[in-house]
Image (cartoon, rainbow, N blue to C red; front, side, top):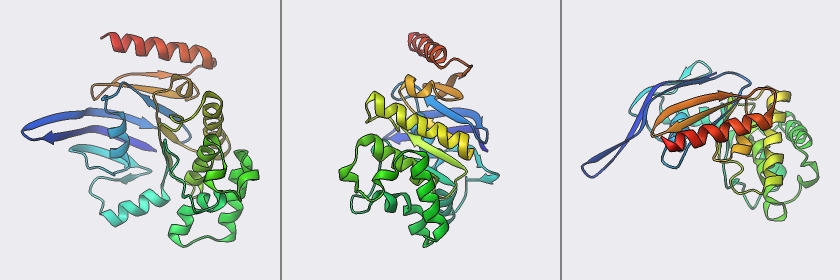
Length: 246
C-alpha cells in the first residue's frame, strides 16, 4: 500500500545543512495500523509531511497504491490528498461554522459531490464511531474526543487508501484518547482502513499492529504487537528507554 524507499530530507539554515531523514525504508500493508514514535527532532513529523508531499524531499521514493508521488504536479497532488489520503490532526481542524455532519462531508463538498451516497456514509461513520447524537451540533458544542472522532469520520468519507494521523491524541485526556484509538481500530476492522500514525503516546501506540521507532533521522527499531496489548506497551517503553540511553 505505502512504500517508502531510501528517503532523505535536509534543511539549510544559512551556511549550515541539517539532515533530518537519512535513508528511511519501510512499508505499510493494506489494512495495517502502524505508529511512528521517537523523541523530538527524530524526524517523525517531517516523515509524515514528506509522505503527504506537503514538503519536498531531497531524494528517495514514496509510492502509494501504485502511484509514485515524487514528481507529481501540484494539481495532481491536491487530488491525491483529497481523494486518496485522509488526514487527522492533533488540533482537529474542524470548521466552526459547520455542523459535525457538514464537517464530515467537507472532502466531498470540496469535490462538489455531496450525493445521497455520501450522506448515508457520513451517517454510517457517525454510528460506527458513536457520534450520531452530535451530527447537528457545532464544534464549539462538543468535547475534544467527539471532535477527534468526527475528524476520523471526515478522513474516511472518501474511502482513502491511507489515513495519516499526526498526534491524534495529543490534546486529549486518557479516556478520550482511548475512544479515538478504538475509533481507528473500528475503521481498520470494519472498513479495512490503513492507518499511519505519528504519536508520542505509548498507550495509543500499543493498540497498533506495529510501531516504528525513530532516532536522529533513521529507523532505530520496529516492534510488532502480539496478543497482549499491555505486554506490548511494556515492550515499547523498554525499547524507548533503551533507545534514549544510546
